[in-house]
Length: 497
Image (cartoon, rainbow, N blue to C red; front, top):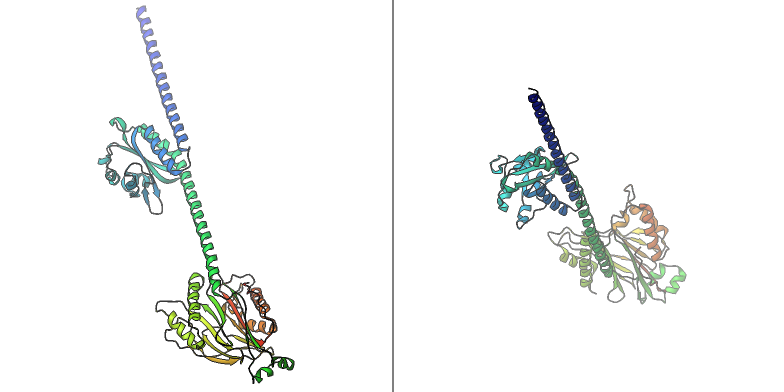
């Protein structure tokens, strides 16, 4: 009896000992499993944080995910917020290009459902799941038996989904596999968002470099275009001399007695000088002057309706036509009529205001034609400033059958003609007030006695003072023609202020 009790006690002790051992072993195994899982997650974290480049990171995410849960394949599908779609940013294999073309709507397929709901999912038979979409599988000819799919969430926002396909060995994925994949998804999402931000930064820097290079190339081309355009324009003032003709008493009467006496036996000159400043690198304002026939000066000032490259091209064509069609027998009116017929096109919106004249230097007779341009000013020898009026025509290129009229006036000795474009009178200050004709007339009156170069300088300075730093919105050009007794001319080059 006593021995039975002892045996029973010993048995109970053994059972308890075995139970405690089993419990301890279970805890040990659970601890080992948890340690193994922790080490796996640590390894995953090291893997996904070993690179900041998105493409490299996506490869590491797919390789690591497949290895950790012992799957045949893995993929990362990113969210395109702007289009409300999922897309494969990286797809490996010979059909990778085809896969990258595939896009899923949010909610479409299992990946779309996970992206829409934010819920992880474990599927043992993919083909029988009502959410299954075979769009990708058919394209790559890859059968999907079972799968895990978890959302990639960073800062509360779903940026994609991570899925693994087909457990190796033909077994289904376990709940532990799903938990492990969810644990992987957290550091993966953070690393992926950082990589996406870095990728966007790299693309922005590259785009900036490309834009900067294009800008530098364009600036270089524009500098060349500027040089080409300026090559169309006279680079120096022009001094043309004509012998004084007998019987030109009006000339002697228009100057002081001393000058009249001196002029009676001297030659007469016509001096031309111009200034131009485009609003951009190239512009549409233009001028020209050259001697034509005997004792005659041709000059022209124009303003193309647009600015920049289109205006510069139209200006170049116009100047080429003016030079090509101007002959000793042409009048300004017949010249503009001929040029207009060449320039006019039904579908063109380009046009140019223009004013051109031919001055008989010896007699002072000025024949001119006005194609819708700003009215010039004449500064008489005595200092009187007056606008020069005449019959106007339309700008060049507006009407194909426009006939331009000739007007005449006499420039006496000591008289000065001022041509300008509307970039002068329409120059605006910060309050959008315009410089205007009144200020121009006052400036010309004040500076009537200045020489050509000084007058151009003071006119531009006066306009700039008025605008007070406001952006120049239009091209500016001024042309001056003086008729006077011969003296030593200034041949200084034109200054493009």
